[in-house]
Image 1 (tube, one colour):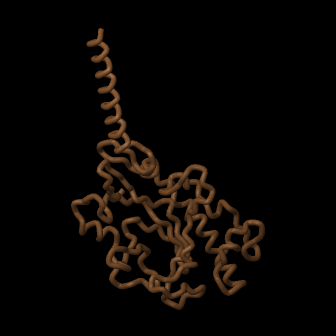
Image 2: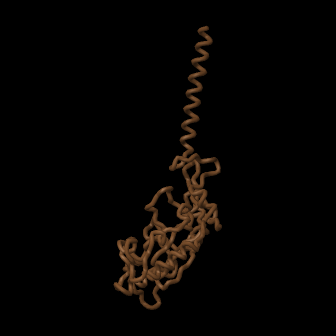
Image 3: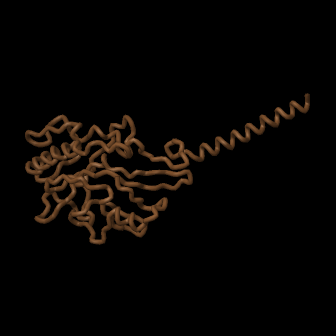
Length: 242
């Protein structure tokens, strides 16, 4: 009986030890958001990587916003303050009433970084409020021959981030940024055609080609990826155009 008891205790202890090892192994293969990482890696925004949505929704919004910006500029000699842009209780300019849905597409739930129920999630970057790439202010009235990015929508651009069990990552960019220029042109810019310039030995800033104040030594994400043809993990980008 004593032998059977000791054997049972040993089996129980072995089960606890093995179970602990399995649990630790299981936890080791969890991504930062708690999801389990399979051997082939985990795509962070899996649904958004399969479905981009319809960029025409952003084009419709930006068309209306450009009309509002021009009317506001004509009245006040400057571009809208955020408090005026987001005040939906009154017209932003004579005869122009913006609504909350004019700054939100029905595809927001597919975007990178979106969290279900997040009402503060912003789809449009207010680039007109920031300096040009050379640090100079973006004027409300660009000079002849100059163009500025006023707004752009990130909803239809994907980083295609995939994480692996060894805590490395790969990026497989896809989709488009929808960009509103100061001359009223609305452009779908493929994610891989964004241009970057090195602002320090260890960092790059990415923006859009053709704007005033952009340094000359820019490279597209596509070019940067081609300089890393093996697509090694933790590189800047691995090119897979989709």
